[in-house]
Length: 404
Image (cartoon, rainbow, N blue to C red; front, side, top):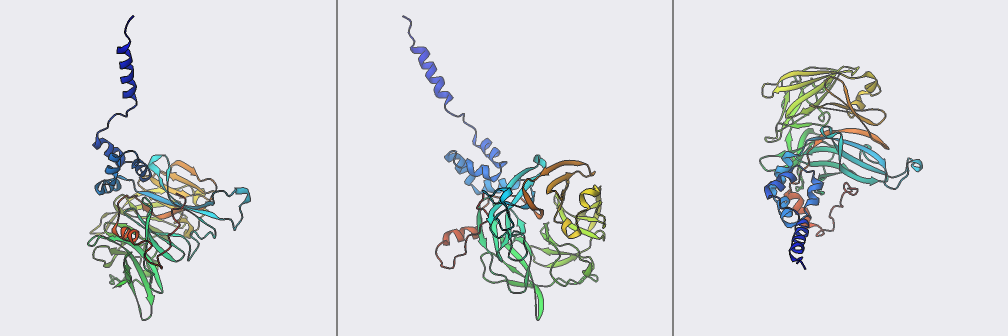
């Protein structure tokens, strides 16, 4: 009788080799993980100890942030989970949602904030939920008259100290000399007005005064509109009442200065296009939009790069106040929100590229900030984590990530 020992051994060896995953070089694994969104990276921590070690390294977090796309943010309301559309009323609880959307990936959406609000205070004036700033993967959010610095990728958060009376938020930025993330406020209270700074782990603000006057420009009152953070400066939109100057704040020296705009139009808005400051301008009919780029920052030389004609039917229903909360422009074209609660994407020639219906949502808006997620951990979050439970007046955890 012929022996079968040889074939059995070969079969067992083949079975064993098939049950073991092939070994991947660590450098290859690291390079793959660097391009994944943060929630996939978190899941990969559980694969094995080697992968956990790779993604726990601070250098990995820094490289991961550098390679992530910079994405616009859309905010909207939706019926709370478990609520049927046909039974919704004005008093029904709603989910407050913020998504980052990627025009370069077939309109993919990444959840950033999700929580249920029984009083529908999302974006509803004072005390409501608002996105106030974005910097290095951190968001400055306000809710119930409190200010929070949050990292959506890690779900870490901390509170800012309570602002002074008669204050308005102006901007959020990183102060390079100290590495601190700071919030800039404007205060208008007798006997004068000034700007001051607050940081997450401080107790009091520090005044920095008013911008110097330049060539007839006089700034009075709080900055106009949300700022654009670029080239180490915060930039605010021009105001007619102040000579159409662009207020600029150097985030290193913390000095306020004034820049000249490229043109003066009925409607103007500052945006970041790549690493360049840009201005979107148009007349009252809004159907012809110009995109100006600040090509020479030091000498303030602007160049008109695009003139885009948009379909009048898509924008005719918006008043000016609504339009700039329904509008986003980048190197990939123009995105607007239609009255039917859709995101519509046009290229630089005004040609429709994509339409993204957002089912069962309302109050759809494009936030005036972009977001680039980060797994980098910060000391002011770690201090709060260590002190959790040590004080009776410990701040209550915000709800921003309850639905994620």
